[in-house]
Image 1 (spheres, rainbow, N blue to C red):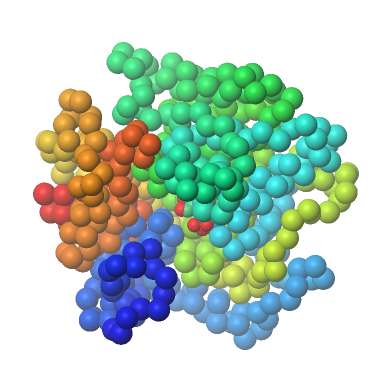
Image 2: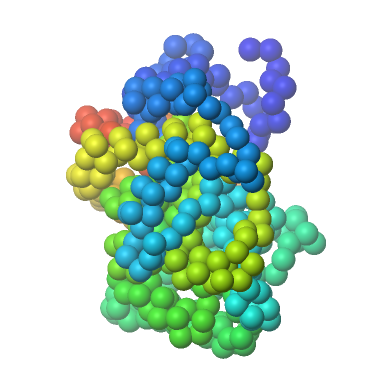
Length: 440
Ligand code: PLP
């Protein structure tokens, strides 16, 4: 290929040109096939050429692409919203859905909705945000400020709002020897209460967390009971809970929303990747009825908006994705193949001198690498271990999602796996065999 005119992430290397998708495989311009074990960043949950999704998008292109949401709603957007609301975690109430184009936009929208809620509720002094570290909530300025990665924020610091960060539960490094899971969960959740009291409860607007941490830490679920305690604390101090399900949502962990498994609902829930599964760029915020009620009784208007909200082709594509997940019983496959993936990873790396932790849920798993199992010391970032493993797996025809370690000095390199919900037993075996060879 002639020199690329695209401003890639890495301007000093050439990317392979992808030309087609075939089930859970991608095919590049040389004809090489890659089994997609990560769906980009946990996006392509139905592989790359699902016929029902393709047909739904084509049919919508032939009917209506776009009409401005200031004047119209449209049927696919309404049908998808009804679908999502009907599957929302119990406690959401009737709820409503707001559509956006990316996970970062959804996070911005959730933060602005939280602020609108308190202004309309007569509590304008509430503006402080508490989030967790590590975490990733996106790359736009509000989402970047919210993310718990000081290194990513640093170059943009003069442009960012101030956000407060507490530790996310990370058992491998933060659970004390002999500390039980429940005690650990309570200790970590109570950090939120301490932070609210430190800031002054009347000033705090929202707590933001990923129910299963994604890219920043690598598929880290919370210890049992953590989110129940978080909900109690938010309720006690009148703080809104924003659940970032951009990565963990839409079936990735075996239920539509990861938070369902914690038996609580958030006030605002963002979703993106598994919503459109990469067939269309789309994201959403699920707004609990209690928030809708305050805004309805106040100005009755949304103080936010983007040109392409409720885009008919994007929502038609996403609706088809969600229908396929349900009609083909794919959440069962996520649970079954997820159990296979976990067992195979644990077997493959049981005695590996550099695999310190294996963690995840559903079809969302991570292997963390360290220099020494005893000290858990991370590799020197200059060694780019995760990047090299990702490249070695790609050379062998399997795509993984590697992340450089030492995020703010906290953890090791890790490799994230998020295979398609349609994965077969043989594909999961191939993923683990290839990753094993790449790590070796
Ligand atoms: N929130 C989480 C948990 C994410 O993993 C991501 C992206 O990886 C985002 C937000 C931002 O989404 P986008 O890249 O679509 O803006």
